[in-house]
Length: 209
Ligand SMILES: Cc1cc2nc3c(=O)[nH]c(=O)nc-3n(C[C@H](O)[C@H](O)[C@H](O)COP(=O)(O)O)c2cc1C
Image 1: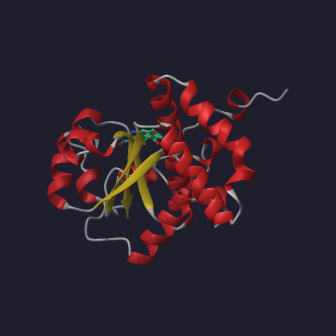
Image 2: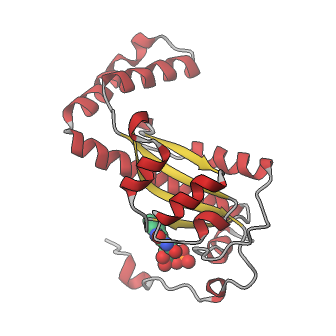
Image 3: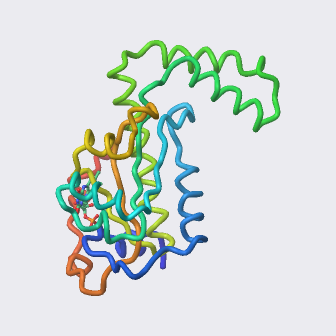
């Protein structure tokens, strides 16, 4: 299947087959793809929770307007934005670049200034919005990679973020829920899998200048 065929194959799965689980290798590959998601300046201002625990997912389903995917899917993925984007966060990122690329920190001084100007120059509210946007890019990568690997997924923003934060203890971790996705395998009788894709016509969607 070509990528376009796979993107047509995928759909926001409403009903998962709860007996089918991702293998450890499938989960690892999918998480590797998400790890590779691009982000502004490469800062990745989010963390990603892989929730398997049935009891916790039961509580989260309630906070997700009862959506059954949360408990039926193989895993629930929670994208959570960092709430403490400070100098320390920026400096740790520069340390990491120096380590991975094996270069002296002094060669990164100009880039470090840019990163620190960005974290210092934005208000707390702006930074959170920015972090949420980056988390959504990671969600996009997850959805595309899942399709490529024949794994079903449902992106979701139908949940109470405050409740999710509470149940998952995110505030103490300096995080807040951005968006979630469930991953697994479609139930054979999920009628949504048969529906034609509805998208804006290209003539309406794209503006060629
Ligand atoms: C950010 C985002 C949030 C969504 N929230 C939900 C949700 O809470 N529940 C749900 O069943 N589908 C949700 N969807 C699925 C969309 O309704 C679906 O992607 C859209 O209708 C296009 O259909 P398709 O993905 O099946 O092609 C969400 C999708 C996105 C991208």
